[in-house]
Each structure stands twice: as structure tokens, then as C-alpha cells.
Length: 165
Image (cartoon, rainbow, N blue to C red; front, side, top):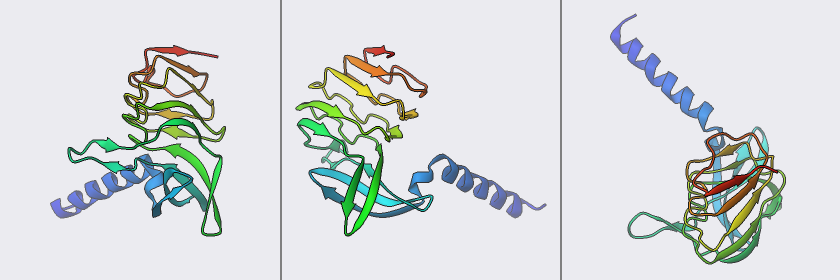
């Protein structure tokens, strides 16, 4: 094996590793706002899926979202005659939303990304469904209490207390 083929082998292993670690990025159709929440819509394993994403970034590159009050994340959303299952909350989706008071997750939610609720100081507690099997670093930084009985590792994910139900 020559050096060129070794380099290509390494590159393909890196690409394959990335695809295996981030399977939700296979196909991304578009970013849309439905009922006040911003979603990336796409296809995963031949299913229409939706992931909640930040509304954008500010001039300093920090996530920018203006969500406030009480939010009930739906199990599915409709867009252009298609139904999409809401399976996750992406990195920084609700970061710095200090006016967010409560959030209810659907029972089919699979993951919550890094810093998803970072510094959401208006949230005093969150109950996470056991369907969530992946929670990113500092997902709940600054939140007092997280109620959770699932299998995700890495707790406390930035929260002050984890209560196993």
C-alpha cells in the first residue's frame, strides 16, 4: 500500500466515522418556522424528521432565540402536506432564553443537544422523558432541577440537581 492509498483510507474512515456519529445530518431539506418554533426538516432512515434549532446567531456568533413563556413541543409537525416527527433539540436551540418559563417535551424525543437550554434562567425545573437517550454537554447549564429517569450518560449536563424519578 502506498502513502496516497493510506491517506485516502484514513480520510474515508474519518468520513464514515462522522456519518455514523452524526446520522441526523444525512439529508437536510430545509429550515422552517412552524407555530413559532424553528425546525430543520429532513429524512432519516426513510422517515420524515424534525429537529428544533436556534433562530440564528448574534453579531458575536452566540446562539440567538427569542422563545419565552410556556412551550409545548409537539410530537409531530406538518409542513407542505408532510408530517414530520420531532425527534430532537439541536445545540443551543433555546440558549439564553431567560424569559422561557416552562417547556413540555413529547414522549418520542430522542436527543437534546449541547447547551440546548444554556442559561435559561427562567426555567427552574425540567422533566425529561425517558425516551431521551442522548444529552449534550451543558444542555441545562444554570437550571436548578432536572427530573429524568432515562439512560443518557454525562449528568448533570450543567444542571444543579438531577432527580431520578
